Image 1 (cartoon, rainbow, N blue to C red):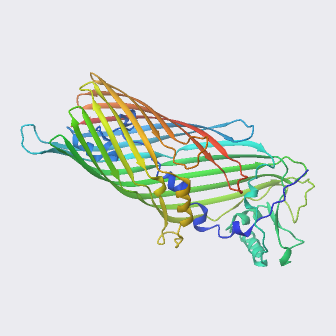
Image 2 (cartoon, rainbow, N blue to C red):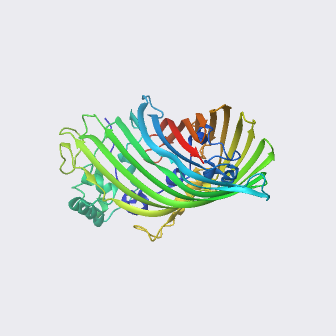
Image 3 (cartoon, rainbow, N blue to C red):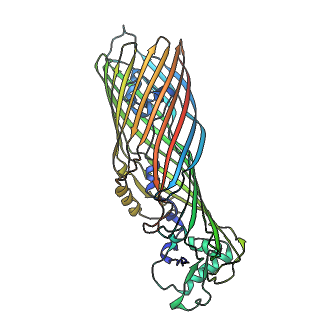
Length: 523
């Protein structure tokens, strides 16, 4: 049986600490691809409120809508999210693996302070409203899993370290010995060496022209699986004001302070039941924790073109964020006492030692894209309204930058990562539609939103996000109560590692149902 003899390159293992361990295009997309948020009323109509006005969600979409408030209000919105995913390796016959991830969150809370002139008072400026509040704009909570068996047509996890040709100096091998003896690992190769998944061939050590590092041989069939768990959110604290000019033109502006936290844990396992190899299995575990903060600003306008027709538009500056990563990685292998493959050096039987990187911290900055919104709303007297929005997001304009004043800061240019952003992503359009029916003190709402696929690659996998929404409301005196449900569907396609196009491709189908309840008072 043909075994895979894997060689490791210096090119892939040198300099693994620092910026190279985490930052990349996926980080730029994660903090740029937002969702609509706000109280349950906003969510029930699919976030389509750019031209609607008198909605707290206008604070993050179009602050001109604050100018339509007739009364002050205070509200609080908790919520629960239930997520499910099905993951599989594309191109092989394997069953999808189901996983779930649930969360509790605060969707929105805030206050609107309205000040309006009486109809008998003179003046073109009829009043306005000041608002401040908290809105959750991105939900990172998700979990996915896959498992399957593949042969030589795909590269295993260990083969991601396959080398380029070249002669390494003796100091290269001495460095591996030093990492293992001190327990302070600084490279993927160091981890593999410390976990007995790689060894320096004893018959070659010290012979410069023939020096090499050999990995344990693997058989023809590899069973691989990976569990990826994400948690966290991106939220925004906003201050805004909207004013009314002759009750025909509404102008507003706002400033947002962004706060984000994201945690991703990945556990990849690989096993081989081939009796001809000593290798049995390995487990690679990584954890990335990212905290960030930033700011942005927005301006908006709404025109009451007809008594029942409103047209709105808003623009938002890029968000300027400072992010801090903490990264950990560990590796462990298990081995059998039997096997016909050559084993240089000593080899443990059973589970070998678990070895880990020293935690790496790195600070950097991110500029997310400019955003522009347009909307139309038509009111049906006291019976309700219909509304629709279109949003432009320039994902290709996201940029990563170094933060020389931060932890492990340096003068790294991020030019390769920013070029990858331009090559991988495209500018997209998001669509939102909603309607509300009013029945005495009750409200019924429906909505739909489609957020475009940000990837340039033209594949058969649509990675747009679809949101199906519904809601109910009650207005009783100065008290209001709203509930909303948002059902989200989206697909992900990714590779767990890169080996020149031979790595497995993973497709994950995701659904998530979020329900929120808003309680508030007007005064």
